[in-house]
Image 1 (cartoon, rainbow, N blue to C red):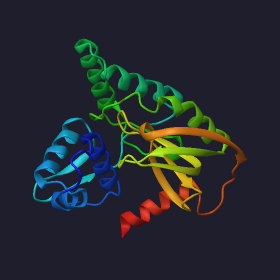
Image 2: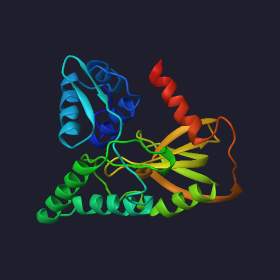
Image 3: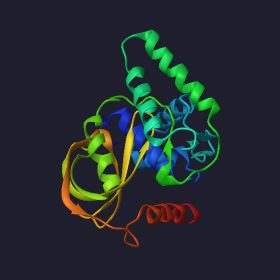
Image 4: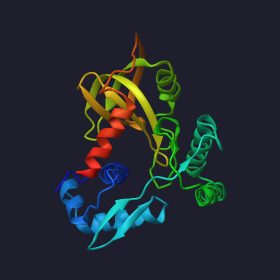
Length: 234
């Protein structure tokens, strides 16, 4: 079995990463990949579904993530939605049970009225609420990441992987997504020569480099999206 010190937070994130290809995945296959019991995966799926993650499926058949629900920029600007999400994430971690309940109620109300329509990935901020801890981890780096995305500026990144090892990368930051208390950064990794998705709460350092980047075929956000779509079709 995998190291039992792996936090449930990390396992839930890994499950989301597995399911985001849009394919049907059996619980026993996910369990084998993460080296935990099938019963554990069942419990994790129940938690994600109950918390509003758009997961469909059932025990013995399999699970998949439906098309993400988005808030179009015409209704809320990315900055407004980011502020809303960050605020709810922080308040939901509050010790005050009344405030925590209010944050969860607000999240449910927002989720209930979101229009189900796709918008350009680069302009969309996905919204889903599920119980990841450490809501405030990584917020320190948000201004640097957002500024680098807008300016198309390369970053030197120090990142703590789930196994607690540190790695240093040079990246082209492309897009940020919000997964309910956990932000992810999609980037072209110059160090690895491939696309990577980083959890913002695991970033230990982010420094803007004196080097800008331009769109190059194979290294753009739309190229990453095309790869994901191709993986979905295969």
